[in-house]
Length: 217
Image (cartoon, rainbow, N blue to C red; front, side, top):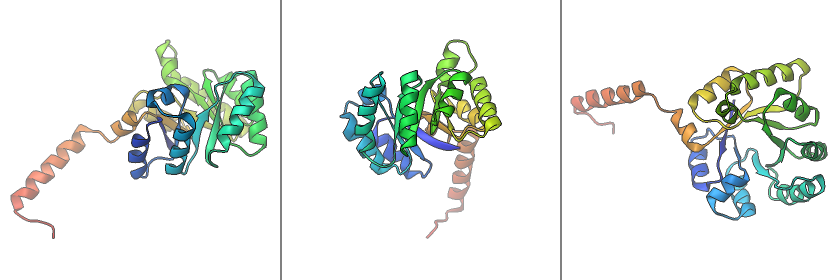
């Protein structure tokens, strides 16, 4: 499973990239607002740090204006994926852009029916929001299982990009279900390293090593 970081904070992205675990980045208008920087410049800087897909979202809602914004965004770098909403106009834009060789991330997916439409429109990525689903009393991971089944039934090439990831178990469950990608805040990715037995093991080894009085030189 590929790991994307859901952030527009270039410092977080650089730190994660150094681990060798980062395969891409997703941004959205809210994350850009939180970063407090120019949108285009931020995407350009991220795309230079991360060789994998960097999702940059259009903010228009009609097809013509989305296409205009997409033209600006896809000129930033070759690894920019255009992020569009799962609406009729968004899927028209998806079809046009993917037919022209541009990666497209269809976002705000909340049903298997929507995911089926996005795949038929040629989406590179579909972004089902599991955390927001959980928030309103639905099991977000059941949506991932349904999409995986449908896509496998028809051999769709669209990659399932699990979004709105809130905690490490979302990552683990997504991997068990065969999701292609997950995108999560840097904090959640960092939490994947954590386990109390690992910490105890390190502490025990260090104590025993210090008792030997040796150094590695």
